[in-house]
Image (cartoon, rainbow, N blue to C red; front, side):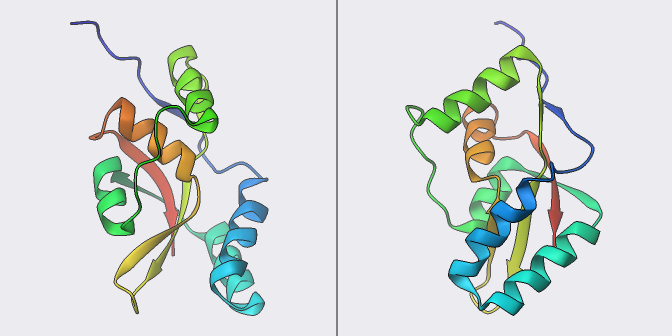
Length: 123
């Protein structure tokens, strides 16, 4: 069996991940709450969780492997490019985790290795 390529990570999320998270969170929360979550994410330390656990906690469906963003992220994994950590928000009212940014990365990683440990910022 061929050895899988190690998934490499940036030490911090990329700058453009925060506006993307804000855009998504503005759909769920009022603007002030969304801004507060993003400000807190910027200050949060990196945590690590397995891909399969993030999926379970988020109640999200796995996107199909034909998705172009998933394909791009899988190509990054294969070429050894570093991926950006995922941004998560705890939603205790609904008992789940919201993937504020990084859903396509999460899907790509899960299809590659569901036990992969993913660096995340979570608030």
